[in-house]
Amino acid sequence: MLQPKKILVAPLNWGLGHATRCIPIIKELSLQGASVFLASDGRALDLLRKEFPELPIFQLPEYGVTYTSKSIILNILMVLPKLVWAVFKEHKIVKEITTEHRIDGIISDNRLGCFSKKIPSVFITHQINLIIPSTLLQWIGRRLNYFFIKKYSECWILDVADSPNLSGSLSHGKPIKSAIFIGALSRLAKRQVNKKFDVVVVLSGPEPQRTNLEKAIFEQAALLPYQFLMVQGKTEASEQFMVGGNIQVVSSLTSQALNEAILSSDLFIGRTGYSSIMDLAKLNKPALLIPTPGQTEQEYLGHLFSKNDIFHIQSQDELDLAKGIPAALEKGHVQGHYFDEGKMKQTVRSFLDKCRPQQ
Image (cartoon, rainbow, N blue to C red; front, side):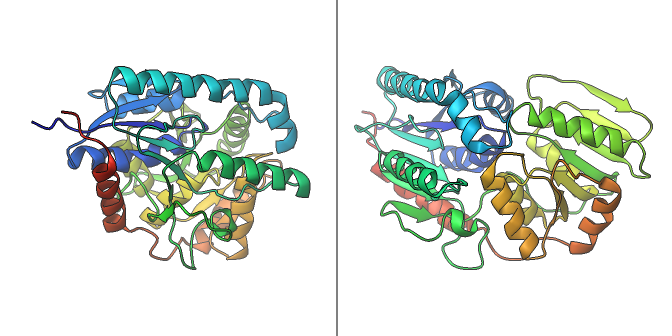
């Protein structure tokens, strides 16, 4: 009798977006009869543990990238030896997991070392073409990115192939043979709920910039005539408290609770992370977005959506909620069809068909 195919899903812990956008895939794998194993580190690991307490989960090494500088080059160079070592260690750990638990396939969201030559392996991304503010370093960075992606059997791109699209030149241009555009993914769903807040703030991303933005928003929000809900993105905590008379703070929320919170507010404030943009597109919500300083991908997405007059973008250094909130409400939201649930289901089914069943 054939046993369920065992699939390891391993999202990157670089903010919570990589983990949250894997949730629809994890659920689809389970619906199609797979036995799912999870692996990550840090807050992404905590989030997966809360969302799927019934699934086995493994600890992977931390990449340890922080954004202490506004230069992405300096940020990467400062941790490059640690990053290389983490990728080497995670590849070794994944090899051990796949052998011990007889894993049939691997799905990695931007984790560079979570692949195997012996079983089908998928690399999930929205960024084929790295953006680095140096022609030479960008060329080197893109070649390294291609090098790692080609270690995988398939590359699933979270966008549509044609224009208009959500990722712009990040994933459009030079093609990769193994690339499959599966459409945008979001764990959230649009429905009617009653209004509770004027603004929901969702924080995430590498430190110390997550904390820096939190402090800046606290200082300004306390002086404004709006009711705020601030979700700190601290999955390791479970606190809830009030700041002043208008800011309700929670450490983290489950997918369902966050879904309701965003829908029950007029405006979203957060980073220009790609996963957040997919969530906003799914819910058709207006937003004030603040790129993480030194993260060129987010700065590019901020420019892209600002140029297309969709979201209101402010830099962290020039954050002005008093002007930004009404400006963001005037701009409206993403309009377009970027989600293709049928394509995602079909791609997952095709992947499972390629995985060797256990006897």
